[in-house]
Every structure is written in structure tokens, then in C-alpha cells.
Image (cartoon, rainbow, N blue to C red; front, side):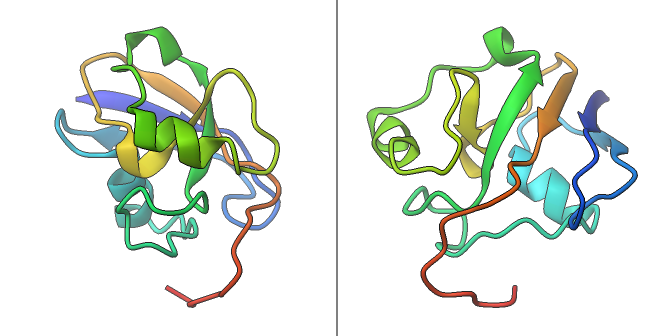
Length: 112
């Protein structure tokens, strides 16, 4: 199993977390399945930026972002070189460490 380390986030994961993930899952699925309630206004379809994360370790092991993901990331709050949309990050066999940004840009809160 791949390990996903989530750095502490004041609201979503105050103590941080270490999660097990299976190859083929998306990072967003892993987070949501482990009760880390990240925003996902577009239902994980790469049509918004609410599931934006920063991959602090393991970024180079990920597949390149698609053009659609890159276009969406340009709109994300707090964009960094290691930013990705968690709905587009497919888990492989390399452990990841991720940071959840302090803010997201969400025009409509859907209380998922």
C-alpha cells in the first residue's frame, strides 16, 4: 500500500494524517474516504479548483497534469510549482506528502 501523509490543516485535518492508498485511486478519493472533507464542487471532474493540493514529497513520481488540469490550476488560490488537483492525481506506488491550502476558490458551497 502507498502511504499518503497529510500535513496539518487548521480546519480539515488539525493533527495531520497518515493514510493508506491503493494504486489507481485518486488522491481526492483517498482523502474523502478517510473523512478529510476537502471541497469538490465539480464532483471530481476537473472542472474547478476546490480540491487543489500541494504535493510536498513525491511530486516527481506523478503523471504530468493534463492541459485541462493546468488550465484549472491557473485559477487556484495559492498556486505553487507542486500544485495539483487531487481529483486528477492517480495514486501509484510512491508515498506522497500533501498540504491542503488554507483557502479554496468556491463560488458555491455545496456542503458535500
